[in-house]
Image (cartoon, rainbow, N blue to C red; front, side, top):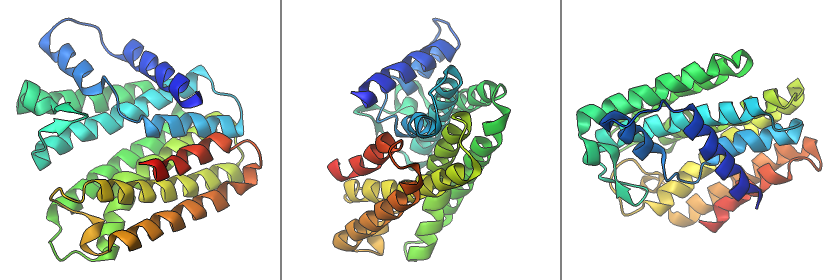
Length: 256
């Protein structure tokens, strides 16, 4: 119930923040965002905020900005990887062409930064994460088929875990968390992001490209997920009874 309600509120916030228009570009912007996926990163932001205090309007704005950054990365990644399907429909570049898709991704990233201007305390965290995502994508493009586990780990840290971690930190800061709480959220978010990427690799095991299953068996990959989730839970233990939702989000990975 919590997740369903918050996803609805996030979608409403994104819809409100998007520029209005009827042209092809505005259609493509909406197409890139709706219907959404899991909305896991903005949900983590809200859950972290709730663990430290109350969910505010600022939390929804920042959560929306985080989802825009994630969506921009998907639009551009699909072009780079020539992935034709995203969320059970043609990817943006297949539907609208590469040129417009590139501009849609650019617009999503730019709009996210515009939104974050009003949240200086968390803007640095999220912008640094978006920069790491680009680094991770560049490293993934350059990696060989003989990649080591450590190389894949470093790519996952940058490309996936960085935004998970920043989402949790942003929520913690907005919720009024102290330094110890925010640091715990930072690490827990990173651990969950790494577990999330491994689970995603397991789901995409038939797909080409960089995949942890090149260096780990499916059984070992699942053990790695369990270890990362346990570590995330350990760091969240300082919250006692206020981190129930974020723990639930982390454990939802077992249902995929």
